[in-house]
Image (cartoon, rainbow, N blue to C red; front, side):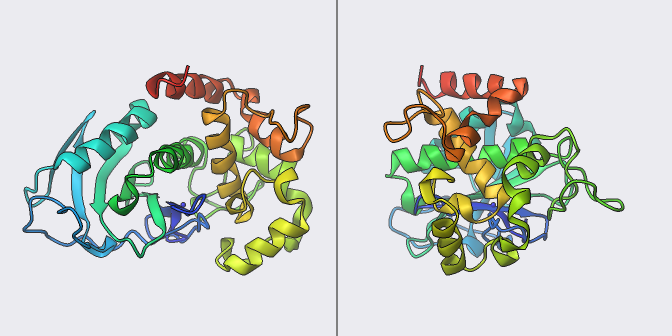
Length: 284
């Protein structure tokens, strides 16, 4: 989840997408952010279908969620979603330009984040159709914030020439960045075997997942979409697990999937973010 879309998490274990201001990432990055259209309604009514293109686009005001550009005030559902998102995002909410809310039960994307026109800033979309699935919603928010943390311009500046690491829709990761290290350690060996077009073909992703270790290699099938999604899925598992990198099926933590979950321990800033998010979600 960049129009490579960039990153949208789905209601199926992770339909996640990130969209970078028109880039097409595909969380595979990604579901399309849609166009901004005016709304005369005060909120998304319960049971009312409102497609992503007609989302109510609220404007964050620091830690608070302000009205949309045309004066629509956030309703209880929007505030509930914002409360969870802002708790997970912490200070990163200051980099958010808009928080869009829509309701489409036929859309398996639960949420997405995408770079704004200013690449240092972000937009987020959330589908209220899945609001009752609290565990998946929490997972999705952590996943999406993981995209913001790992694809921010201090980690992945826009490409200005030859890229010595790995070219992403968002730009060229700094050699010292988490995603550059993740690519080198876990994805570089795949070469051209990775799913095409950032994993746009779900059948191709499923085959790649099966042929490359399944759950011994990836924390979810969605993680096999592309490197960016693998990072975000591994991050969500790292944050939400009480014993990250160790499971009943891998008590020694020796599998590649477990190594990916513990990978964030090598980056103090991300280890600190894990602690902060778990405290914000009352997980400790």
